[in-house]
Length: 422
Image (cartoon, rainbow, N blue to C red; front, side, top):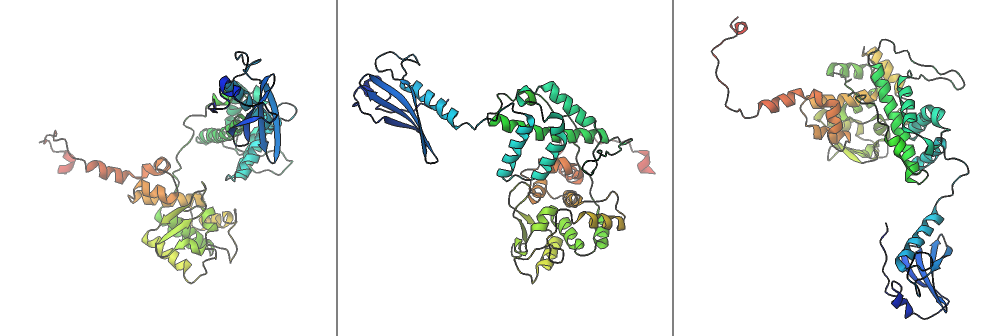
């Protein structure tokens, strides 16, 4: 509930009795552009509300003041109740116009995507594709207010049970992947269903926050599948890294080396300019990351030497990585990298995400502290690093555990293992 504004001229019956009668109201500001007014006439006072926005003024009468009778909220309204009625009128008049007909999931998704674009969020195309492919065909015509938890759980379960989709030409029957015999397939499908459920909840929560639906209870009671996510453990060893670099033609070789030595994402590397490499400090500036935050990447000696070599003698405005002067596009690297992996006999094929994973894995195995690795990768804390790479830090953990002080409760044994004698 909003705080009651005090006004020494209006907040009591005795104070208002001292005011002169006039046509112009006495105003008390409640918020920018919003005011409560009191007009005193020969037969008593009346409360008013005024809203000024976008150069337009709107005014309404709220009811009689409690100048002669005790307040009852209707025939005699005191100062505090007048403020409540004014705020109710402000909220009603500023509420967005509601479209005719029921508010469906399709309309909620459309409103969410408009907000998503307007706020400059990342991955708009992927989010829109996911909503259009998995949510609208099944739930698009359902009224948001009529959604129930059992209905959403059924949709969620069917989504997890469906086979993975393959790229299909528009208008043709949807192709799916055969996952028979793959023990990891059910877990991966549950993980995919969880991600799509998250997208649906985001759209419905946006509708709820905007006042388009009265309750979020239906989808709040739908839980994701447990233990569906698994840490990605795919990374290249040092020998595979060398084979991949040797098998990559230029200019792919340069950006592959950059990924392996910096841990930066492909999209981050593709946008970098020569000016983003700071030779004096030996750091690389990532201006726009996946989460929209700026970060600086620190280098190993090998990484610093490489970036110095590719930035030497070049204009600061040039692309640091390019294809004969042209920007690396979203999918320009996919086929060349796959061919290089085949030539290097790397199976399964590596992606640029694998190269980022390789960088972090090798750093962790070399006992670089997890916080340092997380900072270079652009994570806010070590949780993601621990989830994906923590199992690789066994040598670091072993060294830390064995450096602990002994309790002094051990006893020397006179038994000699036979294997040691041999």
